[in-house]
Image 1 (tube, one colour):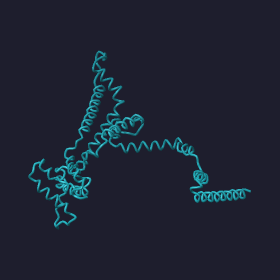
Image 2 (tube, rainbow, N blue to C red):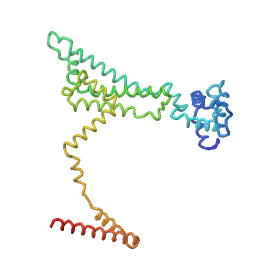
Image 3 (cartoon, rainbow, N blue to C red):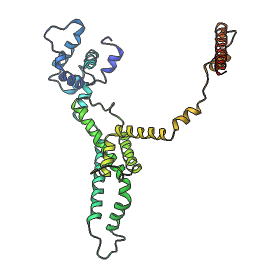
Image 4 (cartoon, helix red, strand yellow):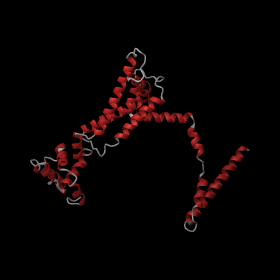
Length: 306
């Protein structure tokens, strides 16, 4: 790509000077070499000159020097440092995941408040008069008895997904590879973890499982944290059910079996002898050979039976 090609000129309006400088600072060893660069490595000198020329300039003044030639050199440097780019370095310093922070806080507050309410209802004495209708105690009672046991899997599964995503963002940011255009699907991942968390704690009887010291919220949280593991386990359960119910044989029985000779006959019916005469003759000859072999096989089988 030439320095003044249309794609390079177009990129020079989208790539910022800060991106170029950040990537040059990230891997200066790729630009500074002991030996003079070859003609094919002129782009290294272009980036070094750009860094020197923009050292004392303001951000808006630097952008004017970010020409198509510099963008071309920056692209070559990106091809070496990928998946790290100047943009990913900038985004990794302060990842824009406000929605993830907000969802994590919401799930955390709801889970903690639910535990507090459940503990208050469990360990606090009943009102002395025995009449708890229409007051705060009735609300705590209804939530602890009727709502929280049903919603706990959903809440803790969603919180587990949020923790997983936050850890993933932290790891990617540490390696300076965070790109908001690539890191997508936050909401769907949280919904998947919350849904699987609710499904697991409701379709399995937690009281009958050997889960010493592991509560229902813990199971839901771990489910949201490790969706792939849980989903793989559910697929194995489905496979076991398929074997026990003999569903696989039903599927195969529904598929009609057809011999090669019949398939060849159907194929020959679709041929136009005037257009594909040679192929039509070859199919006819092959069918005759198959029929002859079948007759011989039937004759041999009859003789052996006698």
